[in-house]
Length: 88
Image (cartoon, rainbow, N blue to C red; front, top):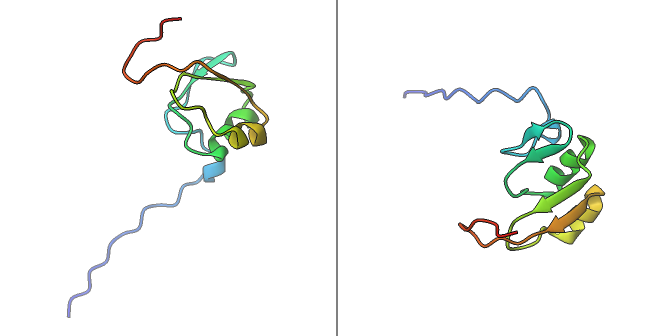
C-alpha cells in the first residue's frame, strides 16, 4: 500500500486575536482606518485595542449592538445601499 503525506500549513506565528481584521488598513494613522464589514466581536475588540474609538458603518444592516458594546466602541451608522455611492 502507498502512503501519501500531505504537508500541514505552517502555524501562524501570531495568535489570531493579535491579527487585524481582514482588509484592515490605516489610511492616516492614527486618525482614519478602513476595513470591510467586521466578521466578529473579535474584530471589533481588535480595533479598540489598536486605538479605534469610533466606527462609522456604511452597511445597510447595523453591526450587532452586543459586539459594539462589548468592544467599547461608539458606532455610527450611515446606511448606503449596496453597490451605490453615498449621497451625504
